[in-house]
Every structure is written in C-alpha cells, then in structure tokens.
Image 1 (tube, rainbow, N blue to C red):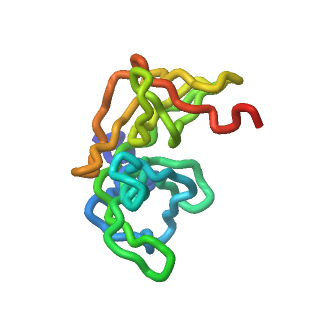
Image 2: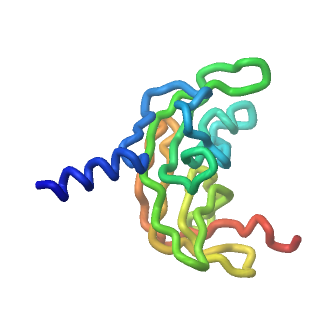
Amino acid sequence: MKSLLLISVFLLISGCSVNLIGKKAPPYPEGLETSYGACVSWALGRDQFCEVSVSDLRRVGENPFAVIVQKEIGRSGNKAIWKITDQTEWPEVHSGEYLSFGVCRLNGAVDHSIIAVVSDNEEQWHVAINWVMRIDLNSGKFIPISPENVLCENEGWGV
C-alpha cells in the first residue's frame, strides 16, 4: 500500500496527471509550455490551414510529457487563442527515431493531420515505426492508426 501511494505521488509530481482538455491557452498553466508544433488542418483549405494544430506539452526547460491538439477559438493581436481538444502521453521514442509533426503520407496521399514516430535517416521519407495518430479535424481528437504505409517527410532532406 505504501509503494502504491509513493507511485501515485511520483506520477502527480512528474506531470503525468496534467490534463488540459477543454482549457484555453495561452496562457498555459504556470510551469508548462509548448516548444514546437505544426498546423494540421490543411485539408480544410487555405484560409483554415492552421485552425487545428498539434503541439508538445512540457514543463519549462524539460522534455515533453504529452502531445496536445488545439483548435483556434479566437485571436489576441496576431496570436491565436486555442482550446485544447485532446491530449495523449508523449510516445516512447528510441535512439534513431523521432516524433514527426510534419507532412506525412498514407498510402501515398499527403495527410497533414498525421503525426508519427519515425525512423531517422538520410532518406527523403521516413518510415513510421509503431505510434501513429491522425487528428480528426472536426472533433479535434486523436485517432490511433496503423503505421502501415505511413511515411513522413524528412524536413531536412536536401538541405
């Protein structure tokens, strides 16, 4: 029983219990930030290409612990105000892999709403390994999909 209590306290302190679904941002809760992300709603058209985005979530200065989906609900000057519509744990990423928040293809068709853990190599397209999510642009929710036939662009290729 004592070890269960210690594990619960550790999870609470480590950030695993932070759930921002339904919250507006910025500002993010004190001590949390996003460091990078991508617009994923290109399929909605040029005027709405960044209406839905996916980002990392981390404690300031630390590695990410979650991935969030955000839908734009307004603007403050030139900055978007987001509603966080979904959140999932940051996937396990091994050496020689990374989480791609970029242009992916499924069965050869470009799909900006896919993020995936991919192999890191010198090829133009990186193969999805085991963790792939598609963002439903209507609901703003993550949908797990098979990594089969998913490739993500190596954004540094040819540079």
